[in-house]
Image 1 (tube, rainbow, N blue to C red):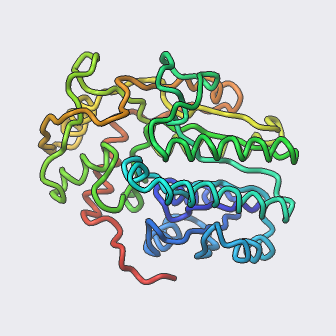
Image 2: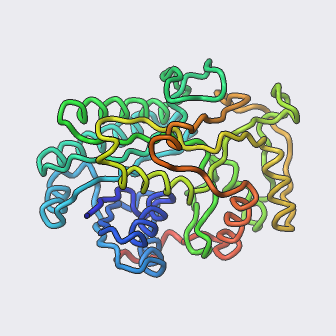
Image 3: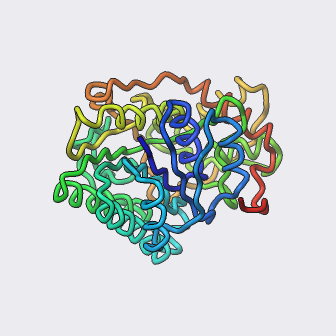
Length: 342
């Protein structure tokens, strides 16, 4: 079975490639290196038992996609590619809508031309309306997104679901909560461009000395310690869900939505303190004002994935902190953006 992984050199895509290759799947990777580099592909091949068949291309390039599908006979697509910085999406909405939505449409058009009828889509809990009660289930109200990034995920969900229903495809749409952690080897992990938008890479970069101090965005929320509470999931557990979807595709045909989270909330301050305790390293922080659009509490009900896919998260917050630090400590400057392309 050949699986096409889009965004193959990104944080989540690279981890998926290693795991899929380890499970014995044939894996074809595609990335345009807009937020990554060739070093990631080299490390995937270092860690995996089989080589990744990799193509540098943009999903919006229909001719390039056709060449890949003709050469590789793709059975299923895992679609991770996309711009993902929430803050940047607010300042550059046209770039985000143009990239994320057009890429999804171009990919689905190519799948249709080449009779590939299975897709796993990387969505986000940002599609849920902020007025929902916790925990969030797959039936919680969607829409009411607070930023263009969230709206692109919401729109791509709708596009993929509509096409899949019309064409008789199998589509598994995963709504991620807060993905952190890294490969246990310390060789692949989260390496965002510029200043991190998410808490864990900010923590690790402060801990390793790349950044001076962590801004703790909001300490006056109606939570036990005044900081936001989020549902953190290890990237290894996240990819387990995707592999389970591929293995259960025949049993769970049609369009299915799944939350991937642990169902447990951890506050920003708790995450910082756990990181410090587990790793024996100090993370200086300072209280700052709230970020617009941040909710006080968000966590998942992931019982549907447990019930239908036989999936359950195994890693603790302590595991997430240890693996994230191993990655950053071993790679204080990340991958490096100037490596030569393969």
